[in-house]
Length: 214
Image 1 (spheres, one colour):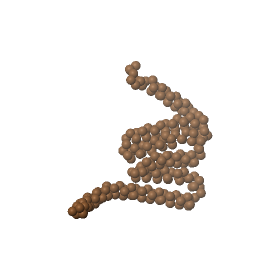
Image 2: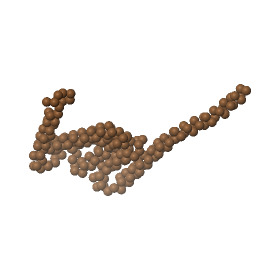
Image 3: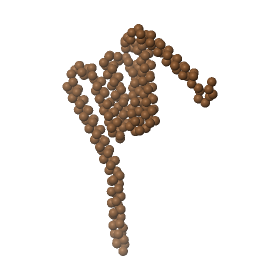
Image 4: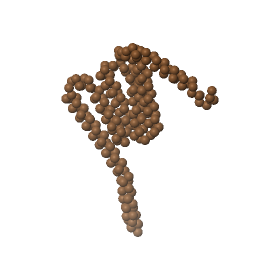
């Protein structure tokens, strides 16, 4: 009776175990297949870009390589943006992709016009500008409104810092040796006065939080 009982237990448990195994496979296998597919897409894009990079570096004319070398920084940045936007599991690549892309664009302008001293204020486009851009894009992909708004706010801060420091370093100190002509010499101080007056007026007119209106 003992062996028969144990035999019946094994036979009864066999279908249950098989059912559990099938259920686990049905739950796990789609995730595994998706991860494998995402990895294949990422590696495929990277291999194509690496191949294009080596071909361009090998056969591009010398003058193109001298003037267009920021292109070789721009392509990886755009690749990271594309992968981060299309492959949900690696959407975090949107942040470094934004940083690399913005750096490449700044380098392209500096290399074209020979204004390397503009790094004295162009840094604001990278930090916090490009970080904010990446965070905003990441929030859009993940449907996170707060992250998108925070990223846009950081990006606008970067653009504002770029504009203010750019006016100071180029308009007053002329770090790049650029001349904007006599009209700019008048517009610049008027612009600074207007901005300062607007900030003062906003601060003085806005009622203090929690206090009575005066």
